[in-house]
Length: 410
Image 1 (tube, rainbow, N blue to C red):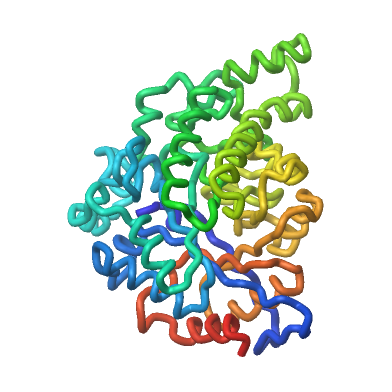
Image 2: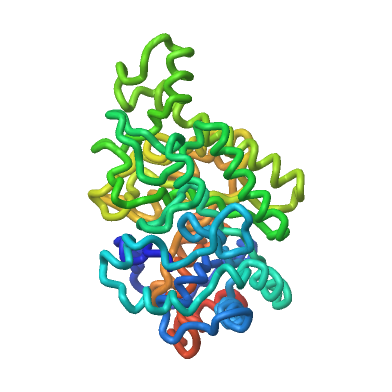
């Protein structure tokens, strides 16, 4: 299970008053609906859970179909582990003796984990096969920027390669986070991508916002600028370009921020080439941060935006045609709103990329407000976070019907 839900203080979209239905002008496309699937959350956090094995995957995807979702984003990396048949990642398991579940008293989850074995069941293959058989688009959801989640599930790669982890300005090394500044790390991440592309997914959803061990918070300074990126390759690059050590300039120096963004852009260039060479029709989508976003809790890690806070230069990615679609995280500090975040992303991508609106699964009224806002903003998709919040039948029948009615044009 992903411990993201208890960590994140989700702020659902404020309801817009007086909305009963969503009528569209005849020439406006109906916004498509989608949702991410973390199989372990369905198994370990839901009551009742789906069955273990292929039958349970069918239950999850039948539920997605009943909700009118056109796409599902199947999580392949669960922390630093795998929920598919990987040769590079270890199977998702109970984790190390010291982990987020143990420390937060989730004893029921720990007990449930004893009954599942991701080493013997390829959830992604089952999802690809059954999803396509019922007309769903199945995307690979890759949390490409983390080698742990919460804490207690580090990847084998980060255990074996502490020398290529993130480094803070004061020299502190992060517990798990691997830096794309190292050629070896990019090759490793591309090798993971290559494993996924062998499944021939309909698309690849690169989630950049999940960034490892929460005990390393904050990841940004008080102004929302990344504290990390002080790895040796970045320092050498900056010194070569400007003749000065980056420790001698401000953390938010535009030149230093730009240098720290280069490795992520290089990875995106390499990933784009790998994906489109295999199949030009595969859609590349990304999730990044916005200027009102945060990590963990509102005061833990504020972000100044994707470039300064996350070191992901999404504007360059859009200009270079490296991405097809994009979304920003659905968490908001201060005066942040879904509309502000969406419009910021539209400006950042300069209208070159199809955009989604991030929504939350809740009441029918909440869904109506979210889908109306998505349509008003011109979003092509409403990403409903997260699929297991809907549960198996008969959970939330009114919300399911509202979503299905929208998808069917009723």
